[in-house]
Amino acid sequence: MNTVWIVMPILIVLMFLLGTDLNKKAFTDVARNPRGVLIGLTGQIVLLPLIAFGVAWLLDLPPVYFMGIVLVACCPGGSSSNVFSMLAKGDVALSVTLTAISSVVTLFTLPFIMEGVSLFVSNQSGIDVHLPIGKLLVQNLVLLLAPMMLGILFRRIHPELAMRVNKVLSKFAFPALMTLALVFFLQYTTEIIDNFAVLGLASGALILCAMLCSSVLSRVVKFSNAVRRTIVIEVGMQNAAQAIAIAASPFIFNSGEMALPAIIYALLMNVILLLYVYVIRKRGQ
Image (cartoon, rainbow, N blue to C red; front, side, top):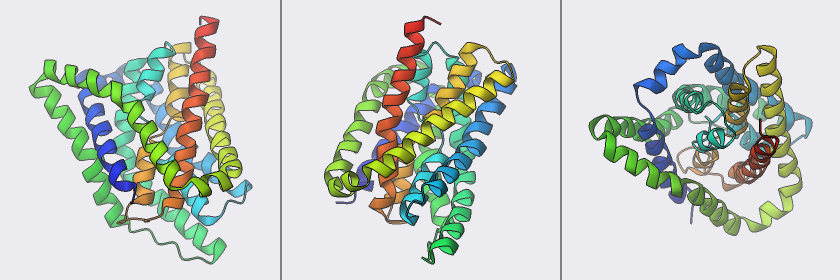
């Protein structure tokens, strides 16, 4: 069974959930804190893919894993980042805004970054890696933009009902992702165990470097602790479900192996960010 048929419904629900989180205020927050939005988006859309490329190159990852780790970095922030920002006493409004904007912007940046990476991998390895940009754009519009817009419309028409639906779906978002990880692990147990050391190192390095760089950048521009924590979380948490959907999709790469970095990344991402939140709360900052 191709796990993409499990990933896609989960991804659609997550994007609908994000849409129900959004209202006019979420986007007017760009005007409230334009520097925070600019730095956050720069970290997600520019810095993170560069770090992933550097990590994959330094570790000399095989082509399929090279593509997989960069693919994760090209995805937008995960919807659970909003919950983590709240737990870390961050700027939740900024978190929602960054997740929403990055979800739209990466619809178009992801295909073109991955096209460049495909050409690089092909030239370096001699293996022809083809990326159907048109199909990827269509899949992104159907799986990401459409359900998010439906969520926004639903909230606009039925605001109270949308809030109740949002509370219910929010409780199932994390368990759904963990169920997806379990299903994927059972299907690719041997491959995950055989490659966990190198992919765990690559994913861990990506997450920690992204968090460190975004923290330093936030300190340089003298953001408040709340804004800095939010940007660290947003840059450190990516939408792994989207990466899996693209890698495993029969219309795009049709590669379960390429999705392995996203699965391992998702597991480590939650562990590392939970530790980060725990330390912050322990210090009482």
